[in-house]
Length: 91
Image (cartoon, rainbow, N blue to C red):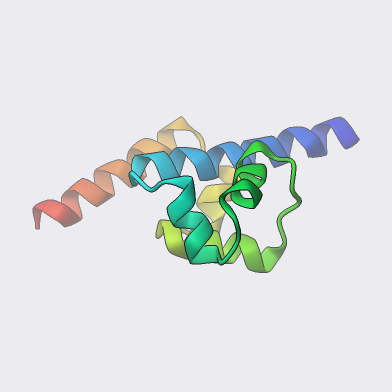
């Protein structure tokens, strides 16, 4: 059970990183928005820090994605987010 939970935690952390990189945001930028140090933010992306619900919602808001995307994002979902962003930009 603990191994499954650790894997899910790493997946969420990886999803946060993928979306941050897609948005061309630096760790420093997100850390500043969250009012934490870059080192503390890095630990979130590495899965070393436990995320609170509040922090997860803050990150989702900054990244402009639904929290559900961060929790369940797979490659297909990431492509959909990118496509939706490109449609909005083109309009």
